[in-house]
Length: 509
Image (cartoon, rainbow, N blue to C red; front, side):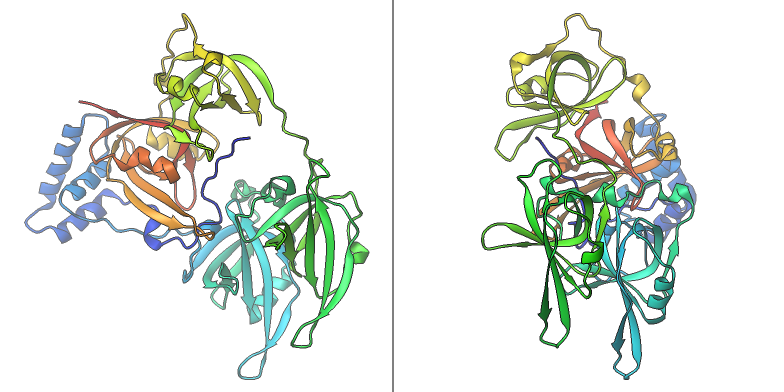
């Protein structure tokens, strides 16, 4: 099965200037230009803005969008600002006043410790998550007691305010809630609509790959727990609870889970054969090559509501599909040529068409709006795979689809706040692409690029990750663009994101 990875909780640290531009109003841009460029009046700048709009073409830019281009022409760098609310993947060591909307994974018992002045303090450890990953949280003293009194439960939605980020002992970021920080329960349903549940973010054991340092698993309890005791060097006693967890799909996948606890949990341990969610966990690679999972007193074991997963069904169908967008040529890990295309059927159902080997050259010759027919393998419900050029071809006599109705204005896209919809738009590049390299926790380095685009209604950032940065890196201010097949992201700031099937065309003249 083909899989594609996008930025996740591995991204660490995220440098400050990687964040998206916060849009500014027209007057603030004019004031910035007046401060940094001598010899110009407000009237001069307004005149330059109107000239820029006239040069680009009627109906392509707002005054604000043109002002960005004028600022760039004059060498004025507009400032960057941090978003007020971030996601877990955006946390970096040293960040202050961090606000984050998330859900509770687990909460430990309140710990007591001795301060330097020999007074007693309190520490509460808990773990939270959002759609981008999990993070350990530490609350201190009166804040620890306040949060403990909230009686937080797994999956409960909360907002953490004014936290700060420090390096944890395992070289990962951890959130700290001090005297200026706070934790509040989120009671408005609309505010939790984009937050996943524990079941959503838990990884089936069958599909586990050691990428993140902190995660939750879905699996089936395969053996009853084995209990042993261990005494640490400081004299404290630890209860070790170990058992086998098997995959949801078959009995072949089995891994040992080891929990380092302060109390015996055998009286409330789920029966053998129970489908469960367990986490947060970390993994350990053994000398044998096997992977073992480790947890502690923060680790929870919950019943899994859904039925154990069945094997992914793969079927072959003959279909007619209209091509809407074609992504760039790539290669799989095995070196096989690959192209992703966005297609739809007559009943307006969208699919990602994955073309392999000789099919790639055929797809790259197709224009948006053309219809193709072929025999495709259907996987995961919304993906079509074709690896033989003999299985696909143009639909004879099919008219080219008029795609004018697909295109939307930026103001309409921003107003929709719909992260599930696929968007098409025509715009003008307002800035040159800013490209950075971001290092993941596992040492892998990935590319990130961002560009500001606009039309006559509004402006928005367009971002791309990994190999797909090539689509925007060679775009320059003032160029007109046709952008097919992008998704809207709301955090850390509102932006459009390039997908594997995205295509971007420059309009000449």
